[in-house]
Length: 385
Image 1 (cartoon, helix red, strand yellow):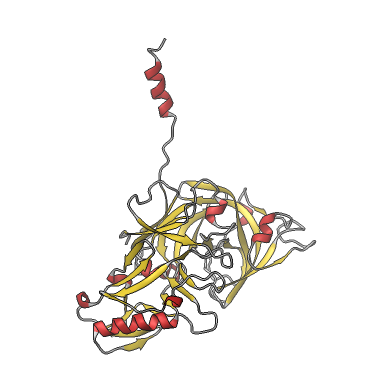
Image 2 (cartoon, one colour):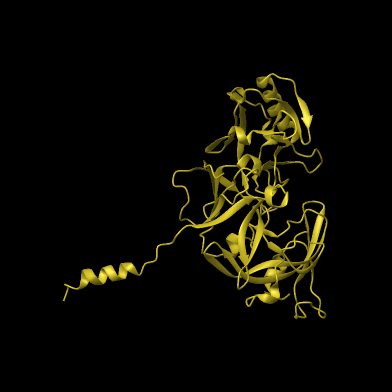
């Protein structure tokens, strides 16, 4: 009776499908759209319509430009009428109240066939805004399919900062990819951003536990209830070369009441520190480089670089983890002059300037892993050019 068991067990084992890594291609938006963000290649709807959506870790909701959009900059628009799984979200659905921005729930005249469609107006980038209908459809990520994904179907745009083919929010809120995908990815994702000069989709967004780095140092994620979407971390100090920079603790300290602290953000281009912190970092860097400096655009520490081997390494010290910035993440080179510039700047000097931002230029060719379930973020070197 038992002699058939080994064969039976082999059969049962063959029924277990091993989960393959979900790798969504990432490319520099600089080369595709002349923007400083990075884009992921996704498909919306059924059958899938390919879109290049900006990857944004500080936004929750997704949005795409839809057919008939007024003011949209891209010729590639999502066509809801050709998707068999598209639908609008009703004003009575809780998701409608979770969208950031001003809501409008008309009783008549809905353009998508429902008298209670959830319309909303949202600002973006400081100088732009869009008007959209909250909708849901299938979201395709590599070989994965996330059904009934809620997103904004944009009908009009004001300003020039709206991503041409939309945005995929990877923040920590209820409308983000990690929240809407439920248990599919266990609250874990990571990305590797190639150089902003790269022409290829050589970067990757890895979703779920499978395929993530095994040996990676991590630092705790901090949560700010006033800014719940942001990935706050505890940056304790900064070194230039072997010299610890004397930054006053209050310029790095996490304070949920004021929003102060340090965040990791894929949408900001240049790492920025509050002005007092930036100035001591910059001054120590200048001291060690010992050259003649000038300004160029957003950068105030530009110089003729003849030997980058003598340029000091900048190290960001987090709780439990150090990040030594590679030289390509420390300097940016002018395409029109022989100048190289320190690729870090001061945050705007205004009353709300309390936030330090680790931006995408400093994240190039690193694997940045976010484990939202265990409230931690890890960083490891990975060349993905």
